[in-house]
Image (cartoon, rainbow, N blue to C red; front, top):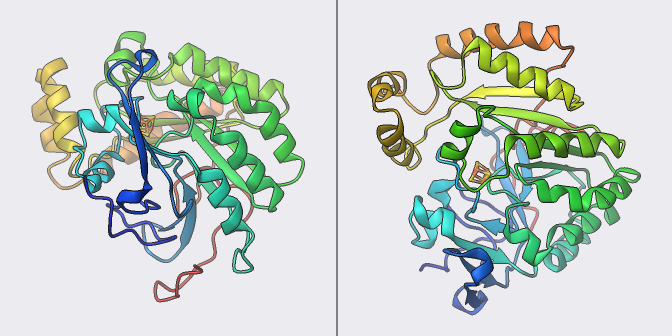
Length: 343
Ligand code: SF4
């Protein structure tokens, strides 16, 4: 396992930031409660990761208290980040979970630096902060409090219903800073959801979490992502999805088509071959040109989704151009890539 070569405060696309070298590994733990999963507890030396936006002209900030994710979504675009640790991006990503046990303390130190400008910070854009491990480690309350205490806006995206535990923390934080909450709910067919996201809470449970966030007085968006071509893009599925999201009280919805970058594509296609072999040629053709679905497909999908959103009175949410999370506070400033790191 490679733990070296880490750079404080700067997230490489393929790197797992914040590890301290071999001394950072405190212990590896397996328990009957989490059968098949090993937690690697580490002392991180950084919590805030600086990430460049897709066009490289903006910076954003993220925190990943965990690396790897037991939610195990077959389409997860974070899988290749596990390879930097010399884990694989397939089963290891789902079962070998790195836990930054000191993340809240390290974060507090970073947020107190004079160089911290209180730019919005996103959680859940790489791995899920409310995956099952959070029930054991309880890292999020300390993170939320540290961000709120420092006056830093925050945005959370999760599939984890464990978020409900921290609603009082989020309500308290929202009195002081902008707080964005979003649930990721892509699949509204129970059997397909269990096949594609085997470690996640059910769609119904996530919709109930949306309702609980709204009942507490906070806005809550839904990320209907990814839409899977030929599997979840029928008018019937999309209409049912949006109707249920609206009924749960969501304040906005964002959608996008499946993104298959190298390192994810192989894992996803192997799954597709097992579950829907007849679709393999069509996916090969669609994603032959790169990681994104073809422009024509994305336009077709938008034209299908937007009228349904209007029918149910759901606005389209806005994303942070750097992190892809829900936009909260101000949009990130445009910065030169040559600008030195703040840390
Ligand atoms: S919940 Fe998010 S981070 Fe976790 S496996 Fe699914 S897509 Fe990846």
